[in-house]
Image (cartoon, rainbow, N blue to C red; front, side):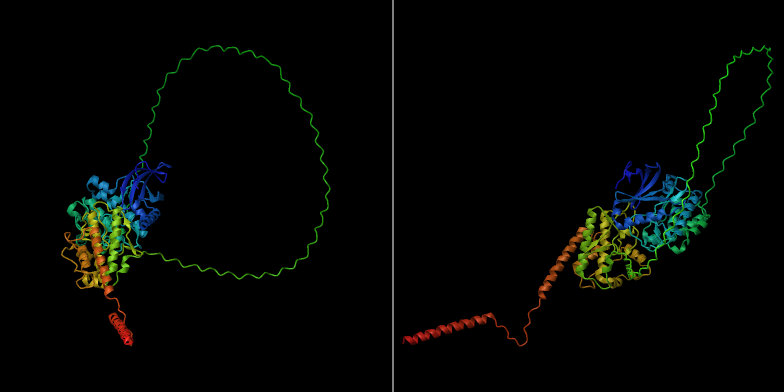
Length: 612
């Protein structure tokens, strides 16, 4: 839903302007018509609202954020819904973001950055104490509030530490994400520390750390040196930033409180200066003595006016007192009637037999939460059958073509993101990626080299990446997990994600043909899978339609082969032991002809004998 200035949300909040856009939401500045106050309004986009999981994540994260109150967290004040789209009302922050401040100033000095860094760490220390990691710290997630405090915002990515699911979705800011985040490993507070180090590095040097370096090299290289780009930075501050940027989490600070100590301790707001005392008033000068006025001549007083006497007014005579009324005689007391004798006590009724207590209905056990079945359930250790694999690939491609026709994006393909829906397959839509952004690499085994090298992905590239993932899914399904491990032994590496990223990004590495040691796989299918997982764009399959046509042809051949095999293998009737063999029909015909000829000859002989 596109909201323009002047529109009302929930018949109350008037949109003033768009502030920014996140992965699954847009942020506006809004005016409350009832109170006249300004707020931030974060509303989910329509594509994410149609995804039940994304919608629930937005509401859950909003509820978590609304319970958090800290001077350096942008408060979430209220949750609501507008035309089916959930929204969150946040505290209004009229100041610049840290990204806007850096864009305006180029870079910050250590004296300017330290108070901001300590306020950021103070907010993170509070979040971590509540068991929450932010997961998406970046320069534009820190804004200057109306109270002149820096505040951390954007809790869309915030997640409870106990929830260790990492979703491969487009968006975010890879230069600020930790290596374990990009690899899809479980996260803890040290992942936020990496992001803090990346933000501080950019503020001090004016450049993001490891800018222009692909994902693989980022994990292999040591942390960049602050002094190389900003030699005036104090050594202890530079060392703290570089320690935050260590690729291995064990080499970083153990907690944000340790980093705070390195930065000079918790942030303490400077007290407001006391007002200067008002200056004492200067004493007024004494008035100069004035000369005494000369006495005026005494004048004779005028005679008083004549007094005219008036006759006195007669007072009214007092009234005679009225006689008091005589008191009425009191009535004589009457004797109280005696109470009637009490009735004889009634015999107690025999107690009614108590009904046996009804047995309490047993409370049914709570129903287990339904989990969606995924394609991963169908990939077994032993090889898969050809027909189900080809049919599944055809249906998945049909779903991808439908999503593209509807203008919808989707999460990166893997067996765990393709859901089973009866005999069909479901792929959930997701918001499109922002320009210049990449995805979190959670399962590099199914990722095309273009994704790992952070190349910008246009629509054909997305189709190419999907086909690459489907090719590896088909290879693993047809070979079976055990056979797949024999072909790719690094699957059992202690760090398989890192090994897969190295394999995928190396153009010289290639998978052997699927039908090389598996003669049950049709050659046409083996060739198609080889083209789907080819790293050479000249020989790779690049469109959904091309792959779909090839699969349709393979399905037709499989059906023809099955029909021919069924006819050839049709069982013949077996004669029972001791039964006479059926004579051919031609022999019976000759016997009948011979009988007829014999009868005719006998009749002719009889007629000749009689005529003699």
